[in-house]
Length: 99
Image (cartoon, rainbow, N blue to C red; front, side, top):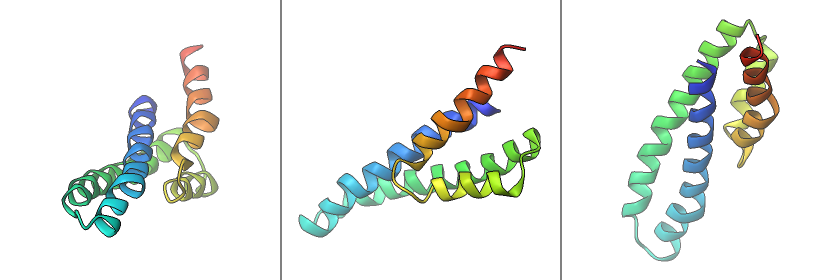
């Protein structure tokens, strides 16, 4: 489950950056709204998947509410999910693979 969550975190972070780096400028500066629609749909789905998987992983790993808050807040900050993946998820996967 941790690997799926890690992949979702990376994809959610990429979609977030695409939305703000490409979709929004095209919509508001070039008056081309179409890419924003599709990137927005993808980001919305990935955001919901990220939050649901964060809940599942926190329950599975018996992580506390503070850890869930870190995971959730990271999804709201640009590059936050990349940080969470490197700081929390990858080390946890390394520990699990060493067992």
